[in-house]
Length: 593
Image (cartoon, rainbow, N blue to C red):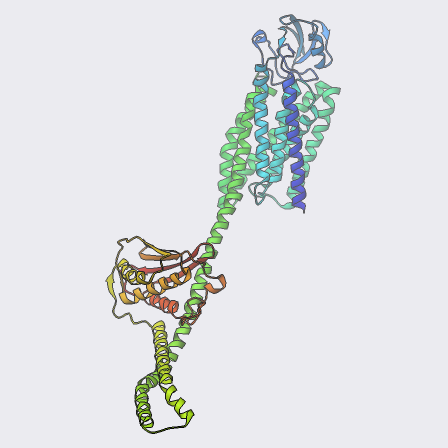
C-alpha cells in the first residue's frame, strides 16, 4: 500500500513537471519577435547566466548578477518595464544602460533589436531537451521492476532538475515560472543527499538515514523561503541566498562522491563495488567539469553560456539509471532465468532419480516374479501338448462309440477350442514374463560397434511397409560416430517408439527423426505431431503395464527404457498437446558401460 502511494505521488509530481514543460514551451514561442536589448535579466533586474548577445550588442560588458538600474536615465523597477519602454521605439535605436556591478555603476551603450527565433533556439533548445531527457529517465526508473533502492529519491532528483532547466528560460523572459524554479533548485540538493544514502545500497543505520534526510529537506526549505521572498523584497540580499543555494548543491554532490568512495572501499559485495566504481568514474570528471563552470560564473564572474552546459548534467542520471538497470532489472531477470533453469534441472534430475529408483524396485520385483511365474508357465506350456495329445486320443475313442448325451457331445466339440485358448494364453503369459526379465536385466553380451543410422534405416524399412498413407516420416541420414550396443535391442527400441508414434497419429501426421552428436553422445530424437501425452501421465509412461491404449501389455516403453539404461544411456520424453511428443535417446559414443 505504501509503495503504491509513493508511486502515485511521484507520478503526480512527474505529470506536474511535464505540464510545466508544455507551458514553458508555449511561453518561449511567444518571446520570438519581442524587442530586445541584448540582455535577458531576471525580473528583479539582475543579469542572468543565459544571456545571448546578438551581432549588434556583442560588445556588452556584463557579468552574472550585475543589475540593470536605468535605461536612458529612466529608472527601471522590474524587467517587465523594459518591454513597455521598448514598444514605443523602433529597431536599431541606441540606448544607454546604467548597470550596477560589484557596488559600482557603469554606463553601456546598447541597440534595440528583435529577439529572433535563432536567439530563442540557442537558449531554450539545450535547456528544454535536457529537461525532457530528465523526465523520460524519471519515467524509465518508475517502470523498473522490482523497484531499485533509491529510485524514489532519484525520481525526485530528475523531476527537480527537469523543472529547473525547463523554467530557466522563462526565468529570464516572461517570469511566469519563478516559483517552480525556486522550489526545484532549492530542493535539488536534498534529493541528491537522499539518493546518496540509498543507492546503490544503503549506508548508515536506519535512524541515521532518517535524520540526515530530514535535515537535508529542512535545510532546503530554510533556503527556499528567503530565496523566494527576497527575490522581490531585497534583491541584493537575495543574491547571497542564490550563492548559498548553489553552494549547498555543490556540497550535496561532494557528499554523493564521498558516499560512492565509502561504498567502494568498505563494502564486501563485489556487485556494489563495481557499481560504485562505475558511478565514480562518471560523476567525478563530469561533476568536476560542471562544478568549475558554475563557480566560474557565480563567483568569479566569468561569462560562461550555461545553457550549453546543461546537457552535461545528463551524465549523472544516465550513469545512475544504467547502474539501476544492471543491478535490478537485468540482474533480477538473469537470476530468475538461472533459478528457473536450475529448478528445471533439479526437477528433471529428481524425476529421473525417482524413475530410476522406482524402475529398479519394479525391476527387482519383476525379475523375481517373472522367474517364479515363468517356471510355472514353462511347466504349463511344456505339458499342454501332451495333455492335448491325451485328450485327442480320449476323444477319438469316444467318437468311435455311439453317444447320445448332449452335454458330453458339446464338451467333445468345445474341448479343442479350450485347449487352443490355453495354449495361446500360456504362450502370451510366458512372453510377458520374458519381457519382464528383459526389462529387469537385458542381455547386452552381444554388443558391437556400429552406427545408429544403420539401426534406424533397418527399422524404417520394416515399418514403412505397414505405414498409413496419410503419415510421412522425415529422416535425413547423418554419419555419426559409432556406438557400442546390441543392434537388435536398439532396433527394438526404435520399433517400439515408432509404433507408438504411428498409433498416436492415427491416419494423418508427420514423424521426424533427428540424430546429433553432443558432448560425447549420440542423441536421437523421434517427434510426432500427434495429440501429445497428458501431463498427469508423463511420469508413468515408463512403468511396466501402464498404457492408455485399449490393447497391448504396456511393456514396450518400459522394456525400451531398460535397454537404453543397460547401454549407459537415457530415454526422455517431452510432450505438449499443441506440439506433439518427442522421445530423446541419448547414448555414449563408443564407450563400453
